[in-house]
Image (cartoon, rainbow, N blue to C red; front, side, top):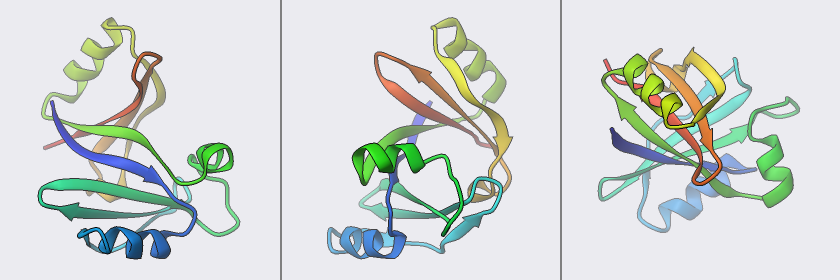
Length: 130
């Protein structure tokens, strides 16, 4: 599997975008994921991708706890998978546990994502590449 991006939880998406732009990142269009109450945007700097995620105003989101405890923080690494079911099964055999079951993600054109955790390295995301 190849690294796709590093996910950052941020409180204010536009402010974080400006700060990353000052570091040389270029951003695409903001996506609103109403299933998870997140605003999402991808940025790239010389082949290195980041995903900025912020909660939608006044709604609960998966990044709320991270932001409450830590403020803005990188919190997951995402890997691309061309063999989604196989890779997830392999990781489960290596003691990764699923914390968010596979679901379609609008930020990836409807491809599935799954979030998995292993205490020794933390949270990872696997994105299905078709």
